[in-house]
Length: 306
Image (cartoon, rainbow, N blue to C red; front, side, top):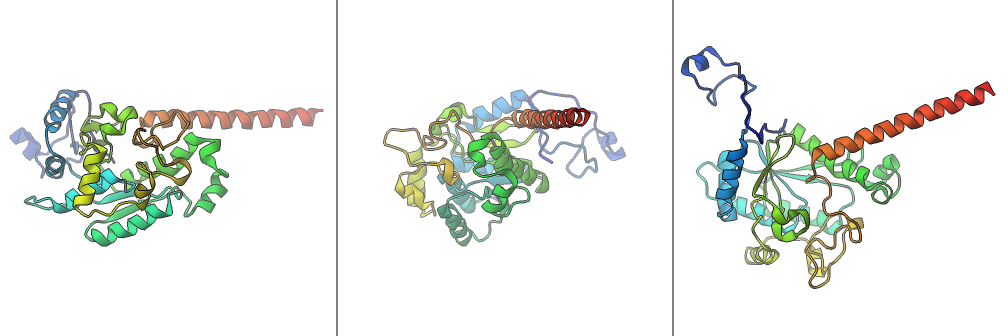
């Protein structure tokens, strides 16, 4: 289950052991399982963002490791995520903690992205990479058999759900993720322009954007200076790399993510959109299917009567 982090303060009734009742406190050794993993009031979240805003990414990462339980990094091996990974591998903290990776294999990544995955494994052997694929699909052919050909064109919302959102939610659930590091930055434009360093989504998942303040050039310079492996497509005009069918190189002067979903009114793949948006979409799809089934039943009845 994701961590429980609330935007507004609520008073919780916690069932405490006799020792807790006597002391008046709940400690880390308390047996009560309802004690929230992470709890942020809205003023606390505002305060944290104000403080973290002025820190270097390494300091933000150090804060994350010492503060947030069940911390993972979600990545598609973009440049920002690779910088984060490299910084984590070099952090000097009293009690080192590996932050394992979650990679969503949509089954439609560029071959260069999958090659990069293996190079990352070689360079950072201590990091575990958890790979999650669409439900009941091991390759692109199986995905097409289940959902139809070129789903990203026929129903892009369903594609986002099946290839990215559902696998991400399954990963959070199975790995018991309470907080994640992302590779989002303000300089990427679009909805990311006013990005906070730390956020909490509707389900209570804490999302930290440690390089929110960095520019593309800063990320690029770090990659070069520290010999961090990167996607070969970056040398061919790509700056933001997703699935092969929705990613193009960009031109001089274009926003960093201008090559994603070119010509569409879309800037995010779904995993950073509100979960309620997809819940509403799935409900609409369910109602539509029920209407179609009812129509078929009525039509069959009419034909039988005639």
